[in-house]
Length: 380
Image 1 (cartoon, helix red, strand yellow):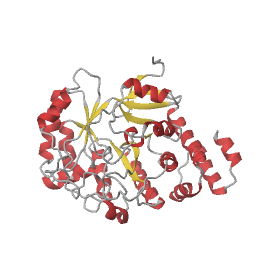
Image 2 (tube, rainbow, N blue to C red):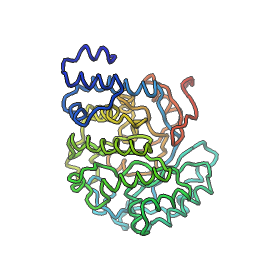
Image 3 (cartoon, helix red, strand yellow):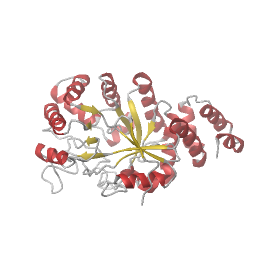
Image 4 (tube, helix red, strand yellow):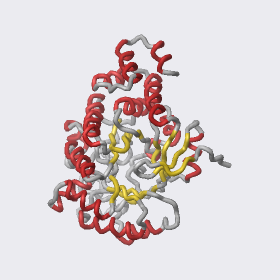
């Protein structure tokens, strides 16, 4: 369905006004965003989001070759939605872990000779692991694999490091950048609204702190991603407020690479009584993110969290990036009940997943330089 056909089939004047804005590449308002959530049919949202996706990227769908390392699942914070909450786990539990530096270096060395381009390092906020520890860790990783892009640490981890080291956010990030860190992931954003945050993760850094940390990262030349945790106790107004704050920061800095909606999963946490939202709600969330975040180039579906089939659907609802091959040793999402319990895909599987829905697989690096066009690859 084209935008022109969509206009002809819609009689709602407010929705028609939003369609006109999208057609003319004009920014929609927060009121428009709320209206879309509450009133627009998911198929209409798909047409709008896909028109933006294809205007920006055509059929190109990005992925990278990466792997994840999680130093620990021991955490000083009590996030109600998280399987790593200090309320649920301590260092003496049978399923607690704390990797040594040598464990991490061996994990890096295991990829020697493989064309992996990124290591993603996040984990629980361990009381013993501070700024100096991670500065040395990154330096040694870059000695082992100088060409590897290090994407590391949520704003929550960084806030703890900075406070413990008694340095500013900017000073903390400059130390890590000088050691070889290339970018920040988007974790820890959850929902910025204080009333919701106080109920689900009161003791960790605030939404304002998260935004300040990412602005500081952008100011030292370190790009980042942004996320939202959706599908729990938040309301539409909180989702739009969250994306509006991200859009405002992106207007100032231009430092965000991608926006990644993360679906709340209700396994092994203190909010397990809350049911998970439907695939229709997933499609709406991603589509409206694409429509609302006009200054974000990329909307990413993290396939281990959302699942492969839903990821393929989302490629028609605004998504143009599906993360990476992952080879994920982390357990934070799998313990919460993510679709993929042992998340890893080969390059061939990534290509097939994208080609099966008539999209063009493009391998990228961590900052979206195109490395290889696999659209002409025929898989046996």
